[in-house]
Image (cartoon, rainbow, N blue to C red; front, side):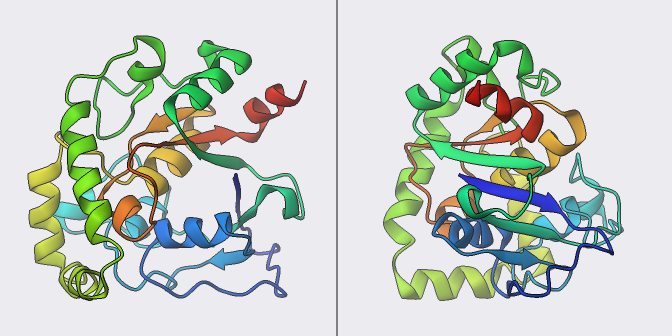
Length: 235
């Protein structure tokens, strides 16, 4: 479990390293492996999605304006780290696990804490999977993610994706293709921004970056829990 806190101008945590890497997905991976780190504007070197939805970059271009919901620009940064080592109460807890474990946690907290504003958009939320046990189109996401998970460990594939997705045009074109068909922005928007803005739990399939750069298990799901809701699991 990974804790997430939005940094203010006063909360600098100067003794924690600043993440410098490919994506927010990758930063969450490192935090899940035990690292405390800060994600700041300029930290993310490749991904074109997360800087916009996290409020690091002002949305101006057509592709960027389509990314929603998003945090208001400018955002100072985020502190990420393993929950057991977090120095204060986090604002969000990211839990990545299998369907049955996640559904059990949601039953304990109460289904009323699930975000209901997704409009059945599977790229934004898999909450229907938790309540109805099905989500049309989930088979395609799972199949694509399993294929990506086979490619993710390959150095050449990593180099290629890092090269391609530095491009605004390639990113915008890819977004147009996957929009409303595959999961999108699973760690940054779906598991961080939506819980922050709504105060509700959101479950998501992993997106391309979550598999390719975050190295997540394609058979698992990700979820974002507001701290107030997460604490209900401890009662």
